[in-house]
Image (cartoon, rainbow, N blue to C red; front, top):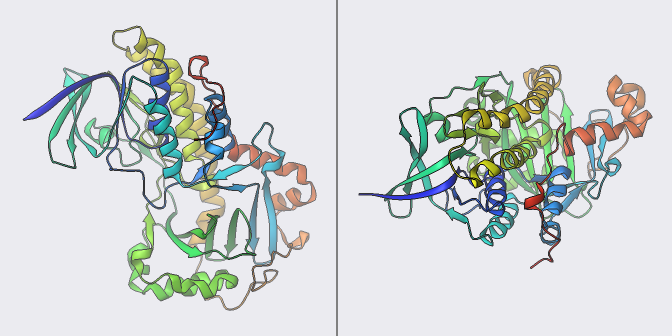
Length: 435
């Protein structure tokens, strides 16, 4: 027996895009149901950056003080460690507005905050452990989804005036709709793992570049979340060499971290991120809209995927909520306004990521990773960050060191992006104290 229910707006996926869209639709007075596949938001190795543009959005929604009460770290500068020493790339302190930084906070805390705020609205419903297994149709029009309740195995049909897919790069909705994204080749995948953090370590984030090696470390307070780039498709062969190979590579790349690599006891401690860069040519069908990674999977370069997904959700709510609130079906012409609004910013960021893949990351991961012994020149065993000699740096980095004001440009590109979206007037609230 299949259970049936109905809503006005059905959102599939309880990630940042889905939860922001659900909250905004509920504040517009639209009946909205969000389906989340898992029982909670507690999953490792999700993006943990909340960018300045999203922090501004939270202020507009009256949630800034609540967010400020969540334990977090702040990233104010982006620094890279090269063989020659250290160079500063971006200075968030030069950003305009109330948030000259990026917040580093576990994504589950961010999603819980959004879910709690949305639950205060009478028209909001969150269904957990709801795994979408198919689409419902009336002729060519999508009229909802069928999902399985993973807690008891029961099947449910949810019919809706509009279905919005926010279920990520592996979107079940996109697959059921037989939509194929255009894929842009990428040269790398990423291994994600944790290593202990100690007092006196660098604060915020660290990028380390060397011939054949590239890693990024995100400061999570008690530990580092580490991303180590490998050649695309190289995971199986590298794992066959044993966990000691990763310990050797990482310890040689960052000698001040070498005595902590024993925390990696087996490959079970290392997760593979299958990097994709792709984009749908069309983000909608009759009755269906796709946003965020479901419409355009982003590379981890710049960590901007969450930023773009949230901006998609804000634009979608502003364009679609008035039509849903007035009753009736949303015509395809209105759905396409969301793509027209968000397409150029998405294409611009993906274009920049493709250049970074071709010019920087591809040559790095494609180079032979020679065994590293001892600390590279300019970086001390205890993590000291010795400045690199200016003459030894590539021209763009030389300009950023010589004229620090220029570091505000990459800071703005990463932390704010090309088209920040703002909360509609009907979704704004006065600031509320933390609870």
